[in-house]
Image 1: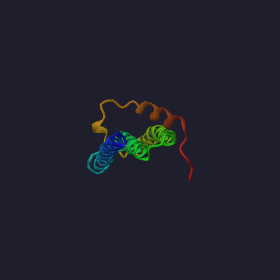
Image 2: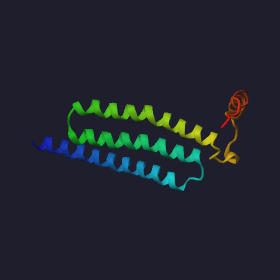
Image 3: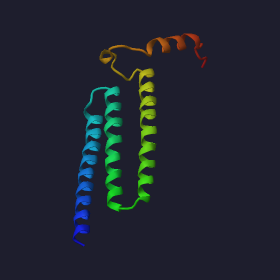
Length: 128
């Protein structure tokens, strides 16, 4: 009985630490969205810490539930987050680039400029 109580106490402490880490990572993502100066920095702030924060929160939930069945659910949720966060950041970054909602002075090398110029040369202007 005492060993079970000690194990429960340790698992609860680990889950608490993971909850705090996940909350701080999510807070860092939110602060980065508000405070950073340009689109690319904000995208980085929204995707990188948020994915790790979600993993910490999901692990804390799985430890709290103390059931192996939830491990599959946690891995599925985190896997979907890993798949969708980079794709959504890429789409936002590319649309921000094409609509000129970015600071070109912060770029060290613009690799997309030649591709966008080539495509815009090949597409005739719309007649509206």
